Length: 75
Image 1: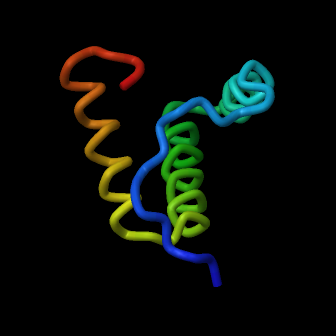
Image 2: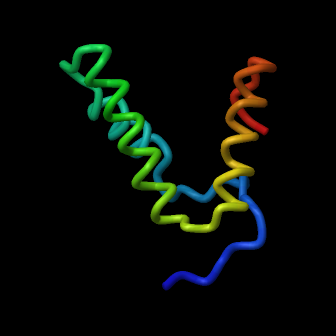
Image 3: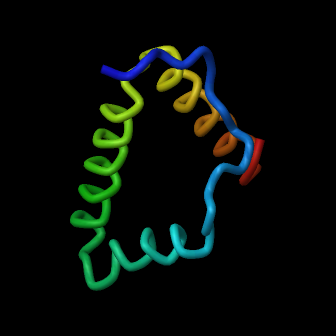
């Protein structure tokens, strides 16, 4: 079992962010809109399960919604 995290870490933490972006784009290639939405939902659920800490997940959801509401790409 993973130790619970105290709060959401939004500092850059990807060794190869361009590679991650390419993987995300490739995951949606040749999919219908519905299939693409399903991939997104499944990915979010898998990552939420990996995180496991409800407080961190709630903070991530709030940050994502805030970014969408303000049009900001980063916090």
